[in-house]
Image (tube, rainbow, N blue to C red; front, side, top):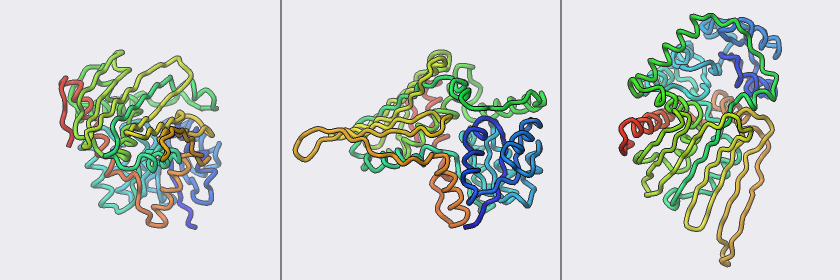
Length: 364
């Protein structure tokens, strides 16, 4: 089986907690040949920690390397500039969520990917969760769904990250942070225009965290026809939106920041007339903790029952990397292509518009 030579751009938490350990465990499929971060100390440390032969602070040096076949982009947002550059360099590209913020950015990334003819996969890791795959089978026909509820109760990531040996360095050039903030603000305004700090926080929360719930909903129910309403409170740290689907079903989705509460809760509950499917996820900053699935149903004899299907032990982060390898080496169709992310970014924009305009927004 062919080994894919990987470059990593962005050596922060998700690289340290998930991607580098998983790539090391999948060394029959991947060889990490270079890592990159704007922090000189961090790129050097990660290379030494995981025995990577090359490190740099210049992403374009990594992208020009003949020793790199594919890259994982997990640097600070926005990622559009480097995503386009990576495709133009002929690399296969794995982009951590959020891929970008505005539709014009999506279009630029997709155009670059199509011209390159390489693989562009978005890091929608929950799609690859064995529990989600089982939930898809249990839910079945979306026309039989009556109601969906999402509850995303989000503590501070620091509560979970402190369980790991997370390394940081105080050597990032000030101008790099200023450039990032300027680009991030430009992307926000390109998506929804100039907005208040409250709306801005809600938008970035949708893009960076609730995006997991939204792409899962798309794969289970299809695309909604309208955003019926959006409420934002707690100064942009909490949001509830109501989505309408072609079958007439409604989804009530809530995300709320509960920073000091240890327990992370993210549930997706799908209700039909005679079946309920309840999927619960752990935080993405964990290893070895499985999602769970609970199925409530009516049996043929009229009796009610509850099942808890067995969940495979493999991490969804590892499974998405295996899939990325198969797409590159075996021409397997990508399950989370960059083009499909356009649907999710368009929905985030419409959810935000429903709040800003205080009215229902048709979603096409």
